[in-house]
Image 1 (cartoon, rainbow, N blue to C red):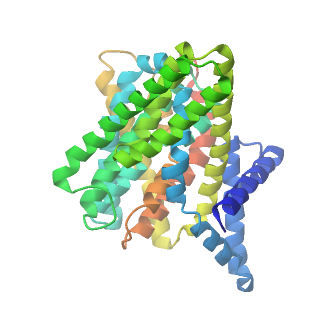
Image 2 (spheres, helix red, strand yellow):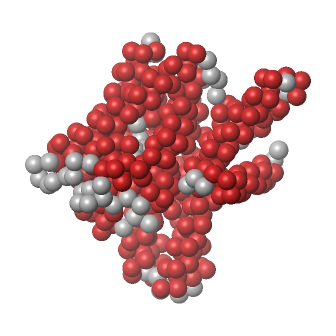
Image 3 (tube, one colour):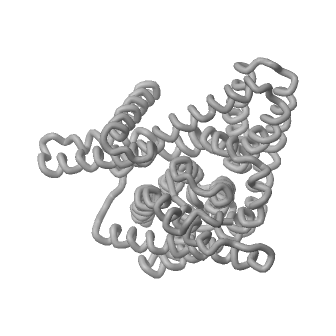
Length: 415
């Protein structure tokens, strides 16, 4: 299949699976599409097992293998999804929660990476450096999954801002940590990084460089939009910022995810308040909500069909179950420590730790990072464990987060 044919197939399947979910399952849209696509994929695998002559599963595996999920997400869809997500998070809301968000996106990611890495190494016998790479790719919460589910969960505003804001930033930070650790663990592979000597430089270059580039490009785009009164052109400018800025960040070797988040936050707050008319604001908001919904549908479809690329065995399934437990324990620690640090300075509702622990969903970014790893004897195990954590996170945690919020109580607001 060429790119146009493949894109057509994915959009048609996303639309059909979305319709099946709407008519029969009535789950939140993104989760429903994932469930239906996962069921369809498992059905193909079952047919291939029961009737080997059909070889349907082999054909499906070939098609899935041709998609290049990692490249499609990390180099294509991610910039648009992060920009769209950041566009709807207000700086005023984020400013009130910035201490929690900053600590969870830094100390929290580091602590979670260590807990998962050392725990997974102990469970599987994997070399510690490679296990830490797994810890880095599974630790960040996925802003795409988180924002997609939060829209349906009706959580308290302060809690939603914490979870959404943290997911936007810890994704970028986690990606940089992943690059550094891959460079150390696979010094002769196709990975990014320069070993121990360049780890600190790489981190600063990626994280700080990405933030500065995002703010600079966002500010330039805002200045241009403030001088234009044409909603179609201004929508095009935001699209150019998301697309072009992301690719420029990749070319400059700075963090493209952090660039997209910073640019989106600036345009979504300063840009909408001071650089757009009411008509433009309405069209920009509607356009990016539509982009977000469509790409979310395609991404969750891709996550569901990626099961065809995963190799399952008794040992890998056991490791996957252990990875789920480790990921939840690490998430709990990553939430509890920053809150313990900040408790002398502000009050928190007792429900904030379980809510943020359970609401820290993993998603397609973790799967894409696992797929991007250099080939090694441990890559299939990492991919299987990552996939199991992601599926558990989106389906089990995503479908129960609203019920947990109701059980813990919405009053007083979780702060």
